[in-house]
Length: 138
Image (cartoon, rainbow, N blue to C red):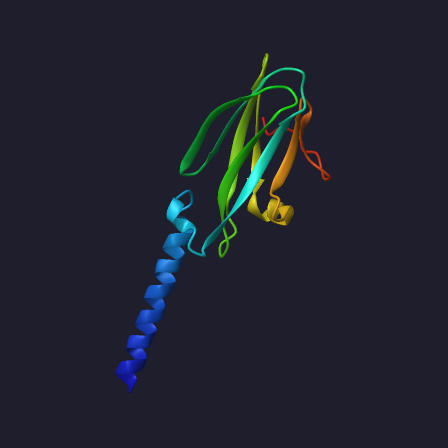
């Protein structure tokens, strides 16, 4: 009987280790198996000039996207469920200006809901639609 209990504990420990390993694999498409869920981040260009957006997270670079005035760019990301540590940051570049901002911080943005996080990008800084405005990081 004690040997059976040890085997169950080993199995449980192995399952926990596998679960945690999958949680740490941010950006891997195979994560859509219950350990992560997709959410979207939409950034609206509220300026009178084109805006270049470049978003990244620890293991993935989304590339450069040029957004015309009045238009938007949508980024779909996988966020972790068990360990809330997803972080996406973006650079925003327009004529003679370059700024960055953490566009998705899971602890801050967990209330975005099923429609994702929607941001108005302004010269003064990004503003959540229907929410707070933030200063540029740099």
